[in-house]
Length: 265
Image (cartoon, rainbow, N blue to C red):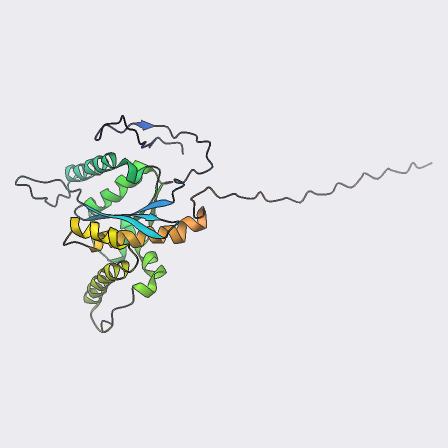
């Protein structure tokens, strides 16, 4: 990768909250360039107020941790206000940088799968939210497009179709109401079906920290699992190793010996 990327290293001497330095990507002797050998990948459901994050182990096929983070800047009085201005987006990006800096073990050399908000908002026919787009772009800028891969929300729902069925009885509704009803149905299914797979200790820890809001972290779970099953396996394998690409053998043309010209008398 030609551009500079942020390298996050674990160090006992590094103070929490110290500045991240931009430095060129280091050449490692290890063949693994797309992630660590512990098999952990990250799923991100972008949001300025409710950003869901899930750490998923591709080896065990289980969620390791769930998180819900608020990146919107607080206004006077301690309340977070919706600010679609450039300054508001800058505050959101600044808070994301700070969060990543304070959690180096969560993000260090991990493949990150982020829900593509461009496609999401096009599918929902919504007006683009600058704040939410800023969250996606901040993660992509921090880790680079080789490490932070956008996934289409429709692709995630289609891949796990059995867990996200169509809500019965909405076919006769107007398009807007039908879409809203299906959206709420999908949110409930993300939590209810996600709880069937997320370990109980991970669920309990998340519930204790977030007694109210649940769906964002579980959306991140399905995104991380989709990336692990659908993208990591196809591109690199379970251990996130760089695939060994076999060189194609090209058939060499056989050179025929030149025929000697007969001397004419």
